[in-house]
Length: 241
Image 1 (tube, rainbow, N blue to C red):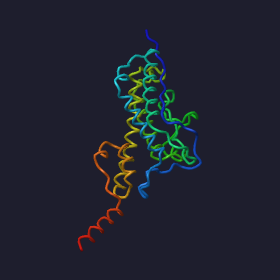
Image 2 (tube, rainbow, N blue to C red):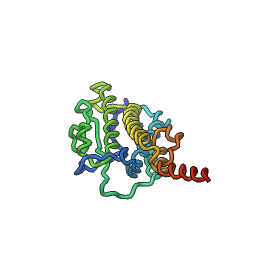
Image 3 (cartoon, rainbow, N blue to C red):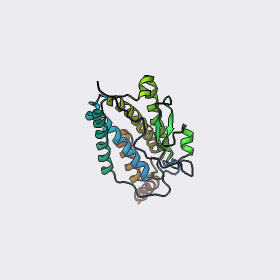
Image 4 (cartoon, rainbow, N blue to C red):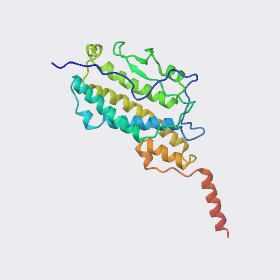
């Protein structure tokens, strides 16, 4: 009989460094339409890279609960994320920036969402109030934790308490969590795009199209309003000659 091994129910690809001194800030500010910080764009890329890895056949083929199968699952996912780390250049250090909280879903406490390593129950409001990270990232991390919590609650209680899940079950939990994060982040990108198209710079539009929903890659941003006005004025002047 194969021996079951525990697989951590955790938000893994965001690192937490403790609560910030200030509440989270909106990094895709639709009032000013400034280019979002590098850190936010980087985290979106990493979230989507994790989802691509989880959808690969090598992970989908794993199913058993023995130690070797679990090790293969973790190794395959680690390799995928390491490739993404090498692909995307890290952002320059910023004093103002803090990563979002790291959250886990507790098997022993009826799938509660907790902070790590404090193991304190965490609501979305508490997560936002206690982090100086981008509010979009905090909300995405929490959405991922809620998706994992929902899957956790659907599992058999005895199975949860014994932490006996297969590699396939672990993948489904990780996939549900990561899909929820990506969906939340893409919704934030789309809101920023819809509010700021026409005033954002071309460089910002290209960045947003790269990390946002596929529809943005097919919809070029309009030129900034000021430049359009200048071109219109020039054309009118030439027509009057």
